[in-house]
Image: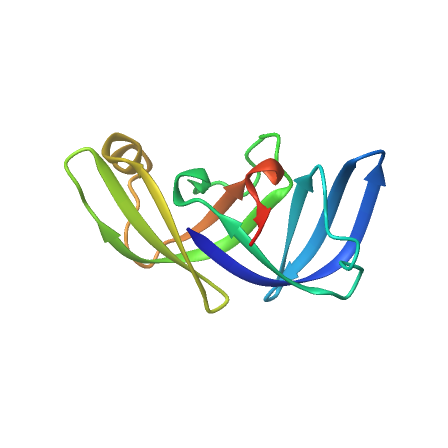
Amino acid sequence: MNTLEATVTSIEQFEMLHVLQCRVGEQNIAMLTLQIDTAIKVGSRVCLSVKSTDIMITTTRNVLVSTANRLQARITTIDHGILVSSVRLDMDGIILQSIMTRHALQELALSVGDWVVVLIKESDVSLC
């Protein structure tokens, strides 16, 4: 599980649905949730979590996908497995891990040192 220390920059609410915009390092990440603690306000420090299998990687910044979370990161290590591989990413000093199939890793031709775009659906981000 990836954890990210963040600061809430905005909260949108409609009925029970909330969209939190947060600042993580020098980048922004959005979170979609049904409920939040009423103590969480703009400016609050929060801990966000994302499963390693929910972190997608692309080499193209302008890829058309249905997520606002597009974060820049550099690949620091790749652990090749028989079926799945682990890719460690450095995002402004914050380390993330993405798990993907070996086939996907080969298709993207990723290498240590490459700059990539990390894609995370808003609904895949949760509060710790």
